[in-house]
Image 1 (cartoon, rainbow, N blue to C red):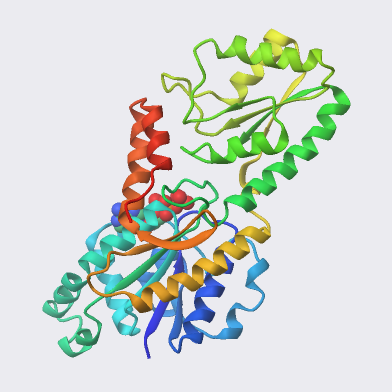
Image 2 (cartoon, rainbow, N blue to C red):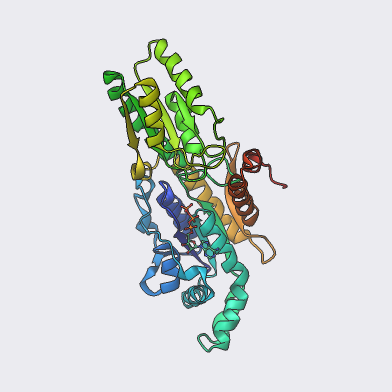
Length: 366
Ligand code: ATP
């Protein structure tokens, strides 16, 4: 029976448990054996009890659980060949030659490197006497499939990552709570949200809560942004609005890449507009809690697709990443998606903001 491993890696995101549940159950439904690799690549490198056979019942109730119940980690060892050699040995010892990884672009890059090196790693394990040739022979090809788990929605080629809508929902709830107190005291709040180099959470939170002003990494404001922001907020106040909400993405900068921080924005609002201004940094509440309905659905449909992608893969097929575009689940070449994601970040680093947006929205060649 074919054995398929599943793991979560990188930052946790709501919906990862739903993805693991779907992969485990679909693996079993397709007549294969399911294994979970606990603690991301750390579990792969350490082996032993970190790699456990999963049954249908083991993932009961996981649809609604937040975080990732099989654990996640950042693992330095896996970035180096000796770590990947240990990982390959542990998979062979468990008879696993297929992996489904739910993580961000870093985790998926690591998986693709591992897949490309795989035959070479096995040969080295035989040469050094760690494994016998008979042990490796049935497993000469590693198949992998990627699921994008990230609250940031920062992967090119997919409309949504597993976790981003849960996080957005949480941000909206938090801003709703803040709204009530801001209104009562006629205050301004500067709300800092996560997203690293990606402004999706900040932008969509702004749209969904009717924020007065939003700062994004991909679209730095003009150099006179202080006056611009103050003029807009004054206009809103002049129309009788008692509360002011400004959303700042954690990676927001000006056009010269100087960070625009929540505390700087607060100083502008209190200094220039004399507004009683407070800062709320939402932090890890944006990651916690249960997954919203959309993430449960996305993770389940994509988990099913990932198992089928593994079972249909040939040694020639490029590693797939499971995406969603215009409400349809499909597969795309994993490394193409990762490379464009990284190229987008590189554009921002050299102040090519338009280039970054184009790459983020680029259609893939089918
Ligand atoms: P997030 O978006 O939440 O940060 P991520 O998957 O991008 O998730 P990373 O910390 O970049 O998070 O990667 C997670 C793990 O994947 C790393 O700790 C490392 O073990 C592995 N990894 C990342 N990049 C590579 C690489 N180039 N080669 C081998 N392994 C890698």
